[in-house]
Length: 374
Length: 169
Figure 1 (spheres, chains in turn brown, blue):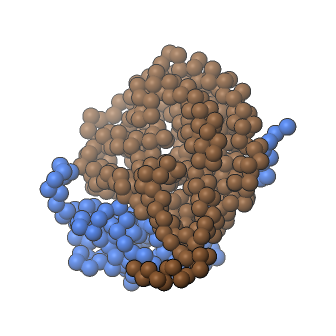
Figure 2 (figure 1 turned 90 degrees about the vertical axis):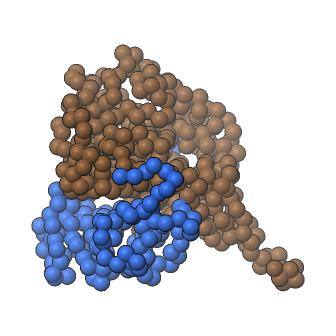
């Protein structure tokens, strides 16, 4: 090290590196950001990932399709149900299985509950990142109620594995409809409290408005999807563009904003919770009768070919790309995970802001690290 | 009083399919002849030699009729003998999709053109492909291993020997 050179350089010209993570609380997992700073200003961010790379894609090559579903839980573990659904839909599409309405409706309700609890957790952590610790308690308190519903019906709370190719593992619990309706009634009253606590807060506005702007063109070029992209006006909701399960029979709005800053990413998620509740309310009283699973062959073999299935997780577009050679194991599986692409834009939008803003911007991207590392 | 005002919401009315698979196939033939074009169940699949990949990608991005601005999936595959990359492209303006496939039989030093200057998302995705399959990309701004250490082999290759774990097929 040229010690002298550093001492003689004026303070404002000094550039230095700081490691944010892999154990930093605001990275929500084991993400390491090598941040290049000039004073307090962020000059460059280099994400270092792979701390929890578990080789899911490689493991899939030696597992059967029903087994793969349990691995997808572990990618984006907050959107576990929606990940399961992606694999199931892909298998069902490849085998051209007709899925009864009951399964479609239950899957959609479950997906939307997953989305709400994911956004609740995000809201809780985002508030905490910006100094509002109360948010964390409020968010987790309400999230518990959904996890309890999951526990009753699926057996698992976060890692649900409720889907299987051809339907669901088991039928819904008799209490399911009542508990979901109770929750919606409760949460419709509680959600305005979220607004009172954080959305209208002046300090929060100062920390989030105009911070980390992402333009629509950049969002598309970087492959950003989900609420992050919709805050920039990029209409990318798979539920609208390529409806799967029961999304073609419900009315809901795709929330689109144009600013693309941290605050609008916040607003999109809050509004999506309202929309998710609307979707659930349209379906919960109209769950058709019928079987909860279609009989599938004991060993599922996909015909030779390539299959791509997109779903909208709470964080964006999850794509499951399967190359099959006709065996019971896939030849190659690729998970196009939303967080992987969303992370790549971080350097682009956080450059030039202060390091404290990096926490806000990172929080507004809502990154789940196992989904990046896979 | 609502604390949030939504500035803009849209419905599906703007979305339209500009070209169907057949038209898209003819369009691609018009800009690059002698390509193997297959109409898959889902997408139109175009097989390109590595030498023509970059030119075709750039034209698909820039031509007014095509405007494939969204690279939504980039997959590296080991076909046994060849190593290949599959690009899933979509146009957010015209809402049509296409799949580009390219492959090289050079396993020692596989080299393809990077498309990261056309779609910035390819930067990360190509690093992932390099990390797991060892395919190098020419003109990539920062081609380093992404998840794994330098001492690892390329685990997604079919001839990868995993002594420690039981991941075999």
